[in-house]
Image 1 (cartoon, rainbow, N blue to C red):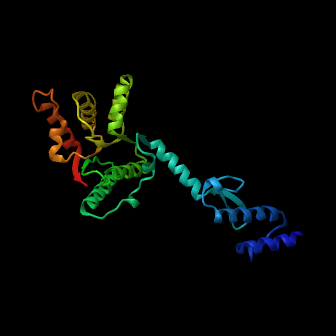
Image 2: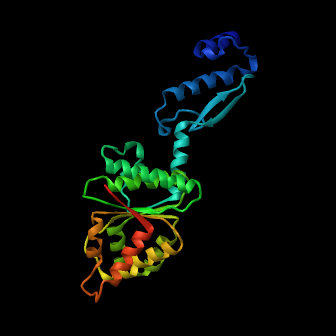
Length: 269
């Protein structure tokens, strides 16, 4: 094909060039531009990218100079990578790594109240104000874990450091490896925002309460670090759950409850 025929092909393939001047030396670059622009229009994910620069989309200025910018899929990948740096998800199911508030059903007053609380909490962080976390309780299957996973992802997207732990797996892990106990407790003490999922599953022991839960909550209270907790243990039964047979009085359990009250608002779901 002649240069003029190639110019005509460029204009036919892309209406953008219909009334634009095309210089001879630009022809082959613009042919490639049209091909890659068409690739982007039919692309459905970075893993299927056909462009010479994977994950990049060509753009053009009024002088037909071509540059490459990250496509929407590449931006999503980068955002996920950044979130993963901010979100320390320990024992969190893979499917919950994509949880988001858009998919959280607002079909009753309790769920609406929880969502309002989350938005208010996020706004407080934006203003650098301290805000209490929440103790979210209710029956199995009400969406507590999904809600907290969505909150964790939202906070990470806002550049906050979040640690999400599934409480039963955390305890089992620490029982199996006492050498990591202090390091793990220090990590949970110091993370910016701590989310504890399924607190109350299984029997409470004095060791778990006094050597794990108490030091974490005490530190976070003194340092004003927010905590979110989900539990099947309703608020009025928390005292009973925290008592163990070795207790001589109610003081150890009461101390934990005071810390929970100081750190969290109680929300039912």
